[in-house]
Amino acid sequence: MVEPGVRTGIILQCDNPKEVGADRIANAAGALSEYTGPLIVIDFGTATTFDVVTERAEWQGGVIAPGVQLAADALFERCAKLPRVDILAPKNVIGRDTVTNIQAGLTYGYADMVDGLITRIAKEMKAKPTVVATGGLAKVIANVSRHIDVVDGLLTLKGLRVIYERNTGTTP
Image 1: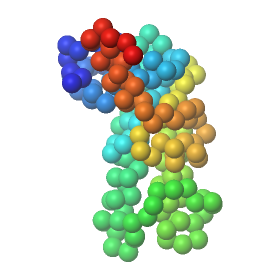
Image 2 (image 1 turned 60 degrees about the vertical axis):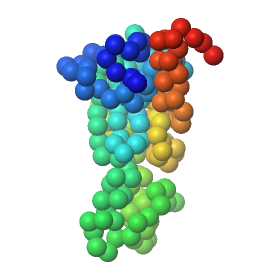
Image 3 (image 1 turned 45 degrees about the vertical axis):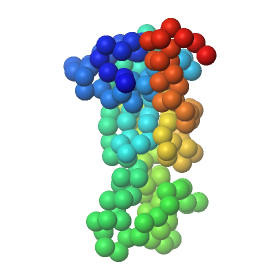
């Protein structure tokens, strides 16, 4: 369990550290074990989360937006004539049918949201962070993003390993 009292190696620099999700802490720990900070860690899960982590292992905060799959599900469930689609980037941004219209909106729309937020976060950080993406749809969005540097599908697990080792004194 990643909870207060567990040694994570991450210094939570936020108003209420108890509000920070275990997944976000694990992602920060995993990213710092693999990449040079400062970092922006983006997790494409149910929510799309952005975590800002300094080279000194300070989690400074972040952004939470609805996840890509959540948006796709909402379109399907709330718009009577829109079908469920596979989330992938069509060849062109301008779709020629309903499916490619939705796919373009989801992939290119989310990539541009991600790129815009990365730009704004980097400006506030006054730094050029390494941007690490993880989560189920990270590869799809990273392939059309201009600012994601690396996709690491095992980042959360790497972070959990690092936290486990810190608390048990073991190493692989």
